[in-house]
Each structure stands twice: as structure tokens, then as C-alpha cells.
Length: 74
Image 1 (spheres, rainbow, N blue to C red):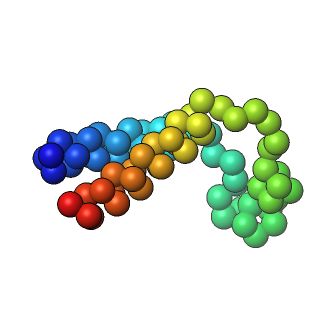
Image 2: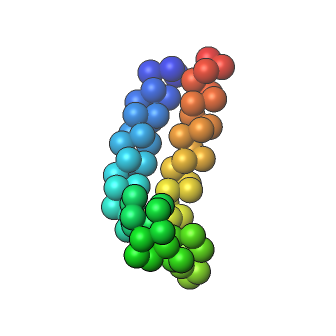
């Protein structure tokens, strides 16, 4: 049981890293933090439909937390 949960946890971790890296950056890095180009959009963000990647990130993050909790209990 622990081995299966550990394997599932590693798969979820790899998928979560991949999905996060595929997403488009919303800020301008350090230039956005110090008021340079596009600070307004970095502060308020773009309001729009939830994309598939952001939904997948949420689901994988919740699954990661649940698996972490289960592995800690076992």
C-alpha cells in the first residue's frame, strides 16, 4: 500500500511540475516588481476564463496535498 501511494505521489509530483512549467508567465519578473513595464497587469492580472492548465494545476495540487497527508499518516 505504501509503495503504491509513493509511486502515485511521484507521478503526481512530476505532472505538477510539468503543468506549472507549461503555463504562461503572468508577471514581468523583477521589472514588474519594481514598477517597470506592465506593473498594472502584474498587480491585477488578467480576468478571464479558467484555462485547462490552471484547472489541472489546482487538481494536481490538491491531489499532492492529500497524498502527502496520507503518506504521513501511514
